[in-house]
Amino acid sequence: MSDEREQWQAAERLALTLTEGGLQRMAARTLAVFLFTDQESLTAGDIAERLDASAGSVSVAVKSLLTVGLIERLPAPGSRREHYHLRDDAWAVLFTGQNTVIQLMLQAAQAGIDTTAADDPARRRLTQMRDFYQFMLNEIPALLERWQQHQRSLRPR
Image (cartoon, rainbow, N blue to C red; front, side, top):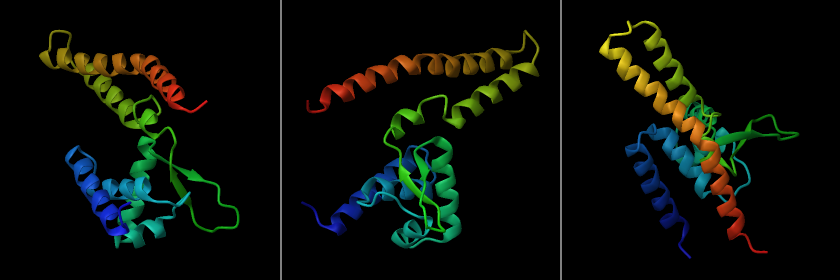
């Protein structure tokens, strides 16, 4: 079993990979904290302490991860702080219609289409963009069902 330092180095490497994949650096580091923690939930203060980061930058990162559906707020009776945890279905939610980024892409494409003439090359490109995201949203339910079946098949009986 690796020690805590090796584990944290792996978390930082993962965060760098996520950053290269397009995630903001602090959001990637925050996600790494959620992936590597042994705690059921974390507060923004816990994350800031672990990352030696400012409360403001952690707050922005948490909001970003909430928006895409990777983490969620947990009830914390008796606590004055918000508690968060990595969703069990985080990766599936990331690719569903619950992901506001996909919805924003669809809306942006449609808004562009609405401003262009029928023979405008931009309209063709924007229509292709909108149709791609709509196709993906339509395909996701079947893909997620196959994923869930796969997960169920891995569980011990």
